[in-house]
Image (tube, rainbow, N blue to C red; front, side, top):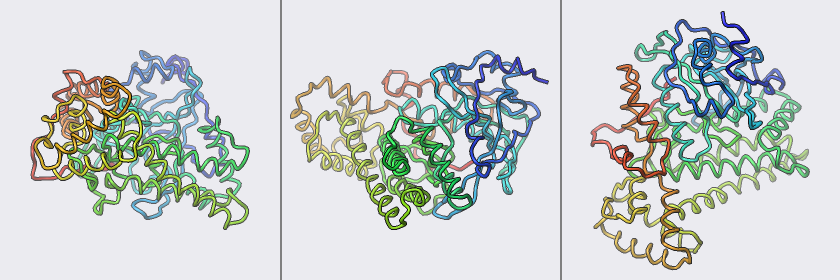
Length: 491
């Protein structure tokens, strides 16, 4: 039995604002205890920033909390209800294998969700067992932390524990629980759920709560619910542009996987693109390329339109006027996205000012990369250090002309070459979580119980813009394979 005062030594400082929302949006639900929890990986720097006691959380008592066998006195565990369009089809969903322990108030005054993923059956599990296997939980830990280091808004990973129990998917696998930290778990799907099965007053309460939690600094005097829509659109435009700029492919952009905070959430079949190709798909279940790399901005716009639909009763008493307001707001998304993407691509090429021809210069380079199967990350890294000979583009038709045009473009700006180089170095990562490196780390951990491969990978991924010599090996491409790389949801 864990004593409350021991748990409190860990530094938990919970509030439970979500539990004060209408009861229709959650079910009070504790985690399912596990037999033999063991801490596999722990994020000490994140724990410290959250105001948590690193030593206490790594003790047996602390691990029991991370495993769901106990929870702090002021926690109010619950499973959230939501719906979602999954590959375009609307479904009733909910936290089928996750429990929100509570909201940690950090020393800086921030409020973040502490969620256990893989913690057992809930009211929304349907036919699932509510558990998760070790491999997918370690994948989420690695990729989410890599995304954070890349400067992309994301949920974070505090810890992974094994449960001492097996779960069964296609094979018998070790069970595990991930402790996820998020600005919140409010999703487009949360609003879809309330819009379909709640009252307008429930919808209003949820919208007011979202505004207060994520957009409290924004002036909402005019039409607060239109403001909510516009602010969510702004954050998603920034987020998706950043995905595209590093070649990240989410893999399952269902509406329940779009967080209103603007964070990347859910790392099931995600992966990073090697050779540049807008049609790149890795997810085994995305058979028609709905969530391909090049489609991600369009899917984001589609998801935001679904969010706008839920807000129509709040936008205006007249339905036609409400639809017009929503359509005007949604129409801004692609313009905002293009602005952020173009700004980011200019930075990747060391361009510090603007010319109308910049878009063509960028498009020409991407066309050359696609035609020659050039690696996305390594091409920009080679250009950063003025080593075009290190790319497969060197000597190909059209590249010399493009390179000359690019150099001429740089010479027309007032800023120095040093400024351009620094901009490129800070905009082009030396490395990304290469899919084969991630798989090597997962295989060593799951099959052999060797976590050193993952630890080394996490270490080099923690400073992607350092361009340090020890990162060089991690930027190499995988050996050629006759089988295309595939990722899986891991549910």
